[in-house]
Image 1: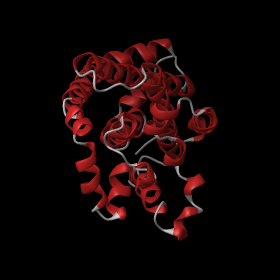
Image 2 (image 1 turned 180 degrees about the vertical axis):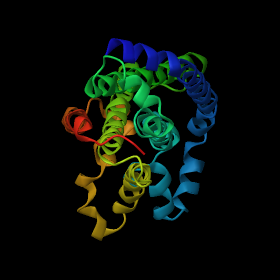
Image 3 (image 1 turned 45 degrees about the vertical axis):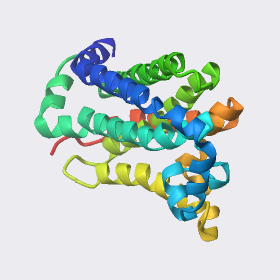
Image 4 (image 1 turned 60 degrees about the vertical axis):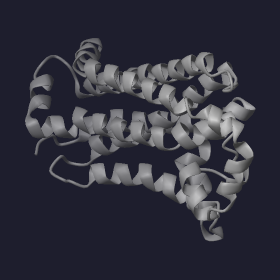
Length: 270
């Protein structure tokens, strides 16, 4: 497993590096706008109040009653905790299918498994690479926020809660990763729908959760949606969300365990 992880990490080190640099710089540039939001909070809030609640719910990803763009937690949730994490989720899904399904199709998985390594160890090595890569990217994001706090003191969020927000992001991404690895381990590579299912779950959960705060018929679905258990703005405002994190950790562990167990039963080939 160690050899598989080292090879996977070496192969992905450039993409991990540039993702880290890109997201860190994006957040620094993004925070340059925060002093304006802070100083013109009342005018901006009046403008937001004129927008339809449906529109606000979609770009906020939470309860619009909490929407105050001059507050650090809300600003981060709208500009990173919603769309940014979904983008990272899409990258995680791509990595999971590259590790298994695409490797089957291009023949590299056959070559790897011809070596003295089991399917399960191979999968564990690739899962570990996904987890470590996302930890590095999220650490770079945290660094971007911390640098921004030094440049723009108006951004006065708790450093501890920012770090906890990244922890919540990591657990969110591990659930997405677990779903993708499970689909890759179960669905034959000759089928073309597994990746689509993973992306629909990721994006659909985000969209449905936004609408569920406005459509009563969808309210009962909220506990079934991943976004119900992660809101970076709430973490920054209120601190740890231990119960939600526990749910995500358990769900991710179940998905990873199922993928690890079922990969031995999969008939490899195109």
